[in-house]
Length: 136
Image (cartoon, rainbow, N blue to C red; front, side, top):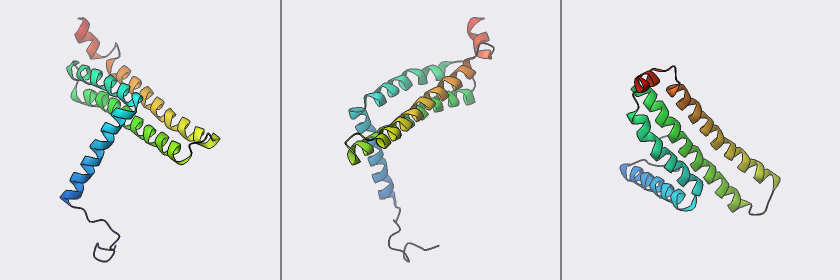
């Protein structure tokens, strides 16, 4: 394997690079907040449900899975939005392949919602101890 001194094309990692990466990520997050209504809606959905997952009388693993399923929706929505922006930038005119790409990215968001519903349903199923604690 080539070392950074052998191959000048390899990017040198430093704390400064890490800070710059974090800053770019934060910029991307706020760009999505500003320009993507779907991301804002998904974020509100997560902000409302994360506290509920935390206060429910379930174990830590169940809570983590419920929160992770919500975060997955946000991640997939960001990727979907990025794909849509790329397609619109590269091919502003309508094209059947561009539609297919956008539809597939949208399907990924839909599947992440289904995943969230399944996880929450399993964790909160009436035969689960949660219901026994809540109702009696």
